[in-house]
Image (tube, rainbow, N blue to C red; front, side, top):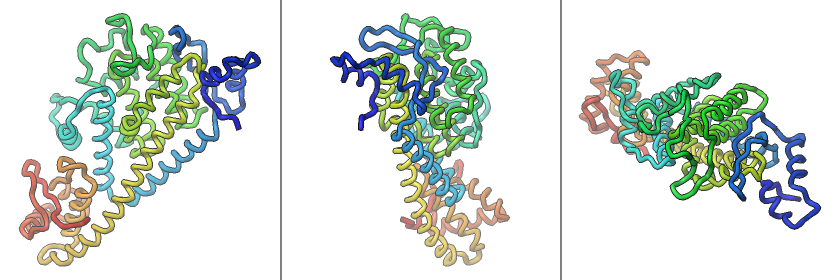
Length: 425
């Protein structure tokens, strides 16, 4: 059985076969019943002479491998959702915050931007209490991701929407000399050129003028809002095309990953959505390789192999999330038995339900929080117990009694925070 390969490779393999026509091969692919042909025309670069073209419409072919990977992606997402439904809200919140920490760290790391995990953790925990007008670095970025966590769906229907998202997502992150210099996007290039890639390797040279950018993104808006392509394929085509267009002088990668994260979180699950940058960072060489391959004009704007590899990258990360959730669920069930026994033995003058609640919240925090900065605070325990009809006074009294008994330890005063000393591993 003939292996399905990029047109560039097929052409090279038949270099001396005069009976073979690469144009016939291309026509066969793009006109096949399993091909999806879009109205998007990415800017492609010829490998041999460096000239660029937009003559080819972006397309992909439903290969057995792609369909299988997409099915695995969908099954993994459902499994993640089913497993997460078996976890209590505090555990889910702690786990998602840990994923968010990784996502912010890695999306910046891909761009060569160093971030401090402790700083990000503090912002994630305290952002809702931050004074208005006192924006810290990354605060706006984190707030945008947290909106995704709450189920907020981005709707892009006009070019201005791209700019509005960019301004809010990267507020305070873009230096003055890299701010958009057109009406909405970049236009005049400071040194006459722009490239995507690493310090030593160019992956793509994007459109130059704001007019070309606006035309490309106008086509993308129409594609994004149509319902004729299944969500996962639409998400990956959109991701490639946005990066290919590269509408800003700086921050395109971070915005592109955020758009992909937002879409996957809404259409599939938050755990998958909050693992995009983490997954790409772990496979960054593969990511650049498939992007560069898709950017070659010799491949005639075929995105089949880009989609397949991105699905491998994303499903691989989903498996890691599933394994982490499964392990954590097992540990939480074990901790629940220990906490129940401790609550029965300790209760005394305190309400057993109240004591159990405090110990279990702290157990969740111990198992799921990524460091003390994400640990549950006393005010949150008090609020959770209040939702169960338990008074603030009783919860504070029980916290003090548990601390005195050596079952918990105070680790912070402002805001007050305790950690569990019970061995629950």
